[in-house]
Image 1 (cartoon, helix red, strand yellow):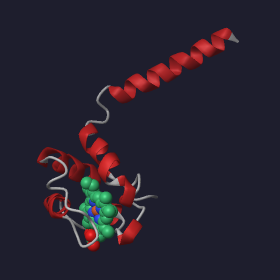
Image 2 (tube, helix red, strand yellow; image 1 turned 180 degrees about the horizontal axis):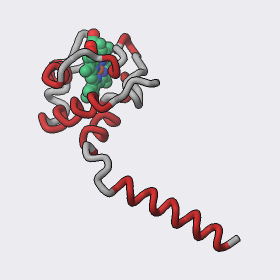
Image 3 (tube, rainbow, N blue to C red; image 1 turned 90 degrees about the vertical axis):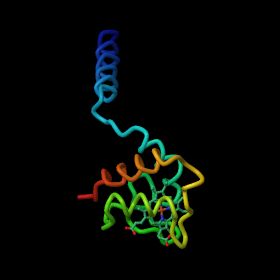
Image 4 (cartoon, rainbow, N blue to C red; image 1 turned 180 degrees about the vertical axis):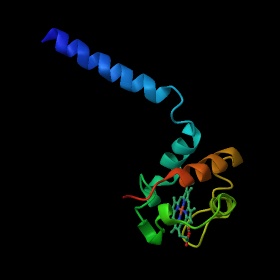
Length: 102
Ligand code: HEC
């Protein structure tokens, strides 16, 4: 029983370290998204609260997303005064990484 526990702990340690070893690089974009965008757009961009579009189907280019986040929309707040330019870029890149569900 004790050795089983040790194996389980060992496996979860390996899982954690492999996630941390650079497999996911846009941590800033993810953090920014989860802090400022998730409330309306949901974990995966599909929540569509307050008339928000499904972000995984957005046809906007990276530049258009950066501009959209900077100046906001009719229902979406502008983030120019809220987060840094670097965070806006990172979060726009993160949006491009959101994948439509199968
Ligand atoms: C208060 C709710 C709310 C928050 C918070 C919010 N959004 Fe939005 N977002 C919307 C709504 C509503 C729209 C639809 C356009 C509009 O404003 O009329 C939208 C549209 C968008 C679009 C355009 C998609 C398209 O193809 O038309 C992008 C990109 C986007 N949001 C990204 C973000 C990002 C990134 C954040 C966080 C920095 C964020 N949003 C935070 C509500 C929100």
